[in-house]
Image (cartoon, rainbow, N blue to C red; front, top):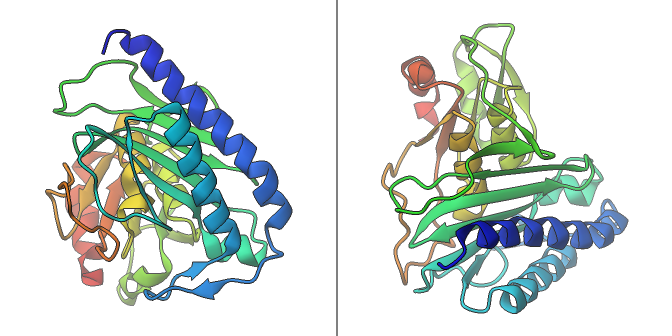
Length: 271
């Protein structure tokens, strides 16, 4: 890559402009659409499909050599070195019912490993992004950001005065005493981004798909958090030719690695 700094700047600006443009139309539709059920029981609307198509077209125009994996169309991980993983509306149930928390999520992978994540929440007018290169050999900007300002996870020890986020399919956890106050957001990306930004000390998603977590996997780690795949610890790098459409990826996010031993045993009942 001849100009790495220019490339990362182009990626960020592309995500900002694309999600903001799509958000204008989606905000007009929120709470005024009729969903249908997909085979896995999740909801989908014409707005999901429109946003998916619009993002795919924008990527194809700006980055014609990049692959694309999205929730509403292609679930097969492609052979290109660079691939975008897209969730056009994360939190479709919230979106259809007029609950003002839902997101547009874009993750960029290099040879199967997410290295950049961008999540925009139109109702809140908040954007999160981050860079995490791991063992890819890439370099460039670092850190995690909310609205352009650096964010980090909390250093606090989990307690009854701290928040831990659940998803709707993880309430089995509450059958036993839990050390924190529980919140349920209804949006996988924002659930975990609240840990990245220091609001919550942990969060769990029982059945997310790769498009739910690709972007936030980057942002959480860039912010200093720990991201744990409860069933498949070696998920990344993704495998070329694999269909990720039906693959659930139970995930735990913790604010500090030293608290994994405290929280992980409490959430493993969701498996």
